[in-house]
Length: 261
Length: 280
Ligand SMILES: Nc1ncnc2c1ncn2[C@@H]1O[C@H](COP(=O)(O)OP(=O)(O)O)[C@@H](O)[C@H]1O
Ligand SMILES: [Mg+2]
Image 1 (cartoon, chains in turn orange, red):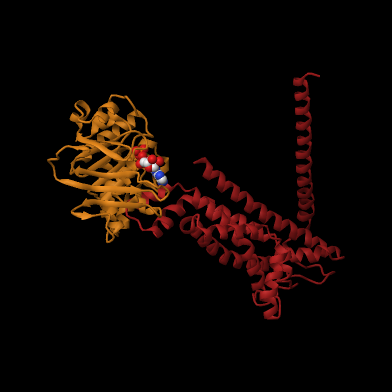
Image 2 (cartoon, rainbow over the protein chains, first blue to last red):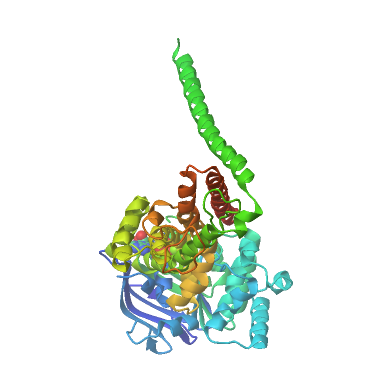
């Protein structure tokens, strides 16, 4: 059984007895997983490649529904509702639970239109409101100064690190409650990485964050809680400083001391 | 001879043979273009654009009837072929994907692409011209639409599939419904490629003669009624060039020149768009 620390904060998400099976697989990629995600905190997911971090993360916004035949079992509670239930409005869910991908995903449109995209989807048409919120999102993503004179330029002209911050601006512009990051810095240089990490830490005040990373130092630097996954199971979830210093599980200890992975 | 010497010799022989072949191929191309330009430019005059066809021996015959007929037949074919092709390509890439139905449509459209165009002409003759009782501009447009469709459908399908799936996922992750993901994000990403497909599709049908002989046939005078037989550059060129009259033959050269320049321009534009996309 997994060792799961008691969480003092309110919970943004509660995973209960969760299993996930890909359409093409015979056995579940996530097995009987229980896990709380604390509100207004940063929860990092670590573990060797292929242990199911991405699979779990993409269950939180039901990304797996884009491809036919995938199966969820168990429950994931968000605001007391099971988001795996049949009556869930996926569009509404994804507005509240945003996602940042491994590689920047700037849309082939202007910088402004990128950030305004989610708001326009929600029917916000008022020009001044749009402009104000785009500016605020870009400021919050610490990229306003670099792009304020070229909002009408194609977003693909930005550097990788700038594009990733643009994607963060686009995600926070719609004011989600949870933000999911899947190795958001693995395609970036160290300086951009440091910038994104700083940004994630600042965002904690407004959103609950789950971040997948294969980089243990990154987990240690940014997160409040860390979950260690292995072969589709959650082995241990603890306060980050405790998990890295005094892991309760032998597997966790072996992983963080570099014995495998 | 050592092994190395043998290899070097063989290499030189193959290199020489392939270079000669390439030069011969390009030589023919420039020969054709050269003759076309010399005779075509020589035959060009203002009358070509302002006068309709005239019986042989009259000084003031032109190609106005064929130019306008060509534009109408190809224009109508484009008007129907492009949206239909793009929608069908969208179905294949975004909805059908790897399903049986989608793969069958891909196979059928590949077969259609390599079908001789005269067969499509004969088909439209049987299902449109015969029931109507006469040739018509419409029948010509229908034939060209059928020829254009698989080209646009397949390029759209290919270009949409080139758009990374992470871009679609990012749009879904912001709460976009599928039709908006396709129309607002995926289409934008594939814009240049789809446009190139359209240009190449038009270029392909603009040079067709055989299917028009069976369908829109010909008219030596200006006619803008699509219900009636209609002149086109290609069929006019065929008629004039094979006629024994020197003035008609000159008009045939002019038609060949205008048509080739039009198609060449479309192809070059198409290539420029593809290159621009690659630069990014
Ligand atoms: N689309 C898929 N179809 C089938 N199996 C998959 C798919 N994606 C991932 N998997 C499998 O699920 C397991 C977990 O993968 P993933 O969540 O990507 O791991 P991680 O993000 O921790 O590296 C792996 O065994 C992987 O092979
Ligand atoms: Mg992963």
